[in-house]
Length: 83
Image (cartoon, rainbow, N blue to C red):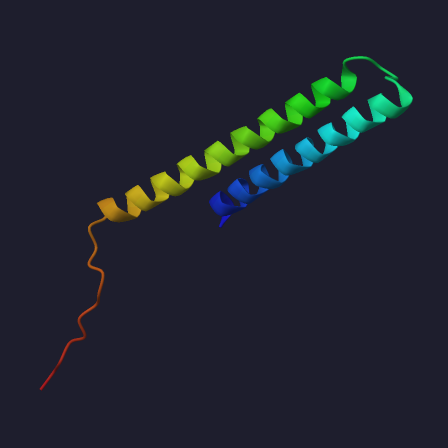
């Protein structure tokens, strides 16, 4: 569950950074830039952080599945039959 949560959080963070970037573009076009460079830096850091979380989540899911496969446990359980 934590690995999947990391992937979901990464996707959400990327989406929010893109929405915030769009807001910054519209706000700058309408009202001008209050602090030049600051909004761009924040959007870039949020987007890259989201991409990193997404990649870590995908890598963790892959490693977890590989680990489960290397255990070589059977996919079924045979019930004992005592007579």
